[in-house]
Length: 239
Image (cartoon, rainbow, N blue to C red; front, side):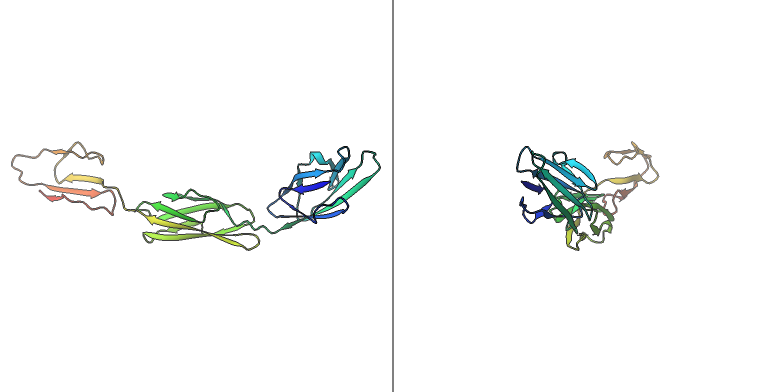
């Protein structure tokens, strides 16, 4: 005879002549996944009684559990007379799962791609980004997380730490190094020749313009605004 579960540990080791067992799992588990329940005789019958409901062992691939679940397994020999009843008590320990399931940023590119078992990341953002929204969720509904939310960007490099605390108190910290890159935007937001008309009208993607001025004009004043406040511009002024 055999009894085992993929997400629970049976103690003591199963012996057909011992009739009381404990299956230990965690509070994250809502159902035991039956790996094997097998009688000595292939022709013997086997039933599980849980909360007054009787089911054939072969039909029970999962067994719903709570914090105080107890069920019995009864094996009956092919003669219908000889029976053995095994009592199983389920113990759910506090969860030790202190991992994130998801970690995301609303801006930039985070490297490497998120993996719950990887704790260190780099988030590259544009130069003009003033804040980052870090969002995520825990693998276990019984875990808590601190450090998610809005991160104000105050320097070119800073670290955001996200700490997950499991139900049993164990902690796991993910670190995100946030890096502001150099601004690659070299466009203007506006270009003017004072008192004159550009042709064509200004467009940030257009780089060639013509200005028609009276014959007697000897100088013009060129004015321009940069698209990004961190950019600089040359070539303006009196020409």
